[in-house]
Image (cartoon, rainbow, N blue to C red; front, side, top):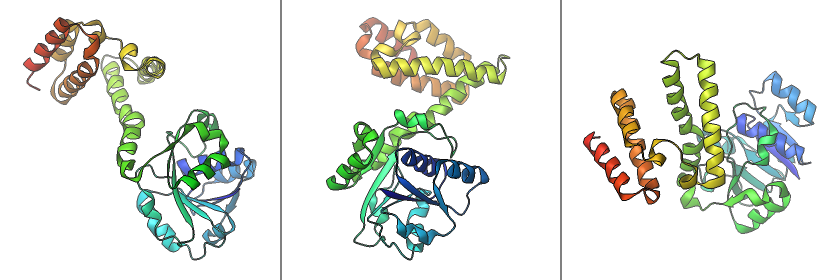
Amino acid sequence: MQIGFIGLGRAGFNLARYFKLMGHDVLGYDPHVTDEIYREAERMGIHLSSQKERVHRVQMLFLAVPDDAVVPVIESVEDFGQVSYIAHVSGVLDISALDKAPAHIERFALHPMGAFSSPIDDLDKFKTIHFGFEGNQDTYELIQSTFPEIEDRLHHIASKDKAHYHLSAVWASNLILNVLEQAKSGYTSIGIDEVDARRIVYALADTAINNYRDKGLLDALTGPVARGDVGTVEHHIRDLTGEDRSLYIRATKELIKRYSEKMSPEKHAAFQTLLEATNE
């Protein structure tokens, strides 16, 4: 399959590299390509074009650009030539964002559920990354057969569910970083070096996430809520002020709600009494 990319940022170039690794012929265009990307493209045999118009030479075209740029990019392409399929890689946009492409071109979306920190990230990540697909059944089956390596990690998402789908990804890969940063700040505030603090937070989070993957919330949870240590939670609340206190209380309330089926009625009531007394 000849595959083209407009946009070679963190999502686009990593996908381009992955598809090349699968044995596909890949062409990429981005007016802001760095020397590092040029060198990596040359090493992998990815063809980089200085002209957007060359994308008409591919069969499947991916738009890996910011969400607000999808429509303008389509409008800027004068000749789609032999392109039979066009896709964006956005998690939140539905495929109506591609409506300005020529009518004969099949539209779909393919969103990698991965957190890429660089355009040249570790391709081993793709061994576990899942993908969200939106489009018709025939195209879904084409993607399964074209990219068999991801067949069992490909999820068909309805257009009406895209925002909810993407929000889940944001919770898991973006907002979680703020929680980790909150934990790191607690360690640095008592004199632990920032690098060591990040390592401590990572070790704790890595263990918790692996337990969650293998066991689910109810059997993975550790800490004061799982142990029923109401006094520990009370100590935490007394130690906190302002927004940090409010955030901790709201998060603990939600955690108790999710964990309630494993708690004794007495412990659940004790937690409820404590948290209601905080007036949060």
